[in-house]
Length: 517
Image (cartoon, rainbow, N blue to C red):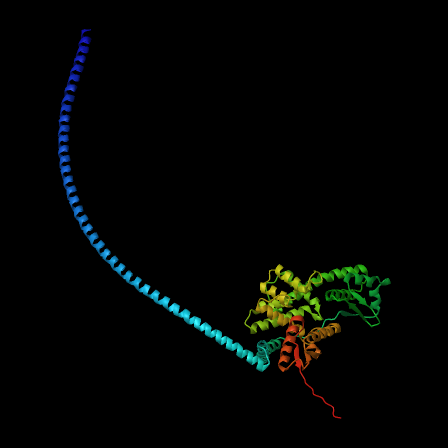
């Protein structure tokens, strides 16, 4: 027990002694720190006073420097202001001088103006006197001549107009003769060259086809019992069969060459087969239709191969092949199109144009005729729609639309195709023409010339290739006859459709006749 108490007492004594020692140590440290802080404050005050003195000194030096510079700048500004004042004063002096000079000029101008006005009045008076004298002289001249001023003017103008008309007509005649001679020479050379390079046979298509029979007994078999076979053939093919006394032959009549060809092939097949009855006729006709479709494609491909044309839609090839079975005034449409294509290519080659495009346009220019009996509209409209449908070149479409003059040609190739079409159609024997159309064309040609003032008589000769016009000599003079010829030529070109060229000849003849008694 005593030991425990003793131990506790020792611990308490140790704690007290430790606390006293710690307090002493902290006091000693605090005293040392306060002394250092006081020393640092004194040093800082000294430094601050030194920096303050240095700063004040620098400020004074800077202020002195700025003052010197400001005084220098003020002195320079004063010098500049003085110079400016001197210049302004000089300008004011010059302006005063100019004002004085301008004032003097104005006074001189006013004086000159007054002089001019006085002179103008004098001139006006003189002009009035001259005009009065002129009028008196004109009146005296009118009295002497017996013509008024207006009458004399009209007479002079009329004579001048007559002289000018004569000179103009002579000049136009000379220029027309020169231009026509040169143009005809070049055109004939070009066309003859192309036509010599391409020549094809001419054969008119007929509207009937003759089928040869092995014997006359076959006629009866084709007619059939009570005519049922011939009625079936006509109903299926759409062709009229003409069976007459001609030995070993029957005639197929139709304006559609395609139907005639299918009917001919059908009858020839039936004759070879020997079995002729309505059912067999229908079977053979159906088979013939399929074979004809193949043949149509062959005709189209053959035309393209002949012309060297590629990249054509398959449906368009069929339309080209169908042209073989279409005619225009007896001329085979496919042969005509191939001929136009060849001529277009030759003309394009002579003129350095696209030959392939010209051939393509020439071949397709009448493509509308392949289906013009199936679709409403002219072959030009149908052809242009087909060309657009199968995405043909715009030049080809324009050639189709313009080859008959329905639309204006927008390219040289379109004009070439129109020329080639006229060449192919106007060749001797290329097309047949009815008497009614021929007579009407001659009547229209004569009517155009008869409607011209001063024309007495008109005669169409050379099958409409030339028109001779006799004018009234008392109304038309020699120079006026050339104008009549030119007017008739212009009206023919604007109002008529004709192949080739038409020569216009104007005849003026004066006959003086007396009878001695």
